[in-house]
Image 1 (cartoon, rainbow, N blue to C red):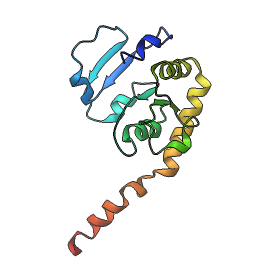
Image 2 (cartoon, rainbow, N blue to C red):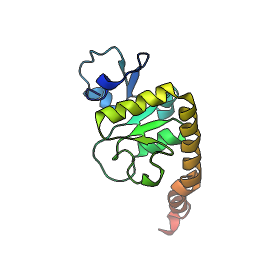
Image 3 (tube, helix red, strand yellow):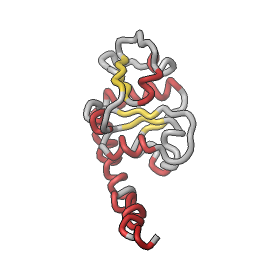
Length: 151
């Protein structure tokens, strides 16, 4: 945030930080940043935001937080790492940037462009509905549980 926040041009913006990362933040001096802490269910956080960001810089595989944001219809800005495995939808379902200025510009664009927010929201939700339906995500576990006696 120290690299991106200075480039945000929109005055009326608040960054809400949820989850484990909140425990690592010692002191916040910028009034636009609000450390919310841990929430029991992710939807508690998602119901409080208009735009999601996943500025993750390292890791492996598809980032579940990105999928969750898209699946909740939240327009999202990610880094390349945050969008890993979703390259085919970069720009059409979420916005992606790896440098602080472009990342901030994408956030400003979403703040100021209602139509784009709405479009990304709809496309993100639809993408998850089509490519990650619950039956696909949980079918292996369901099959294992149904056949546990045969293991």
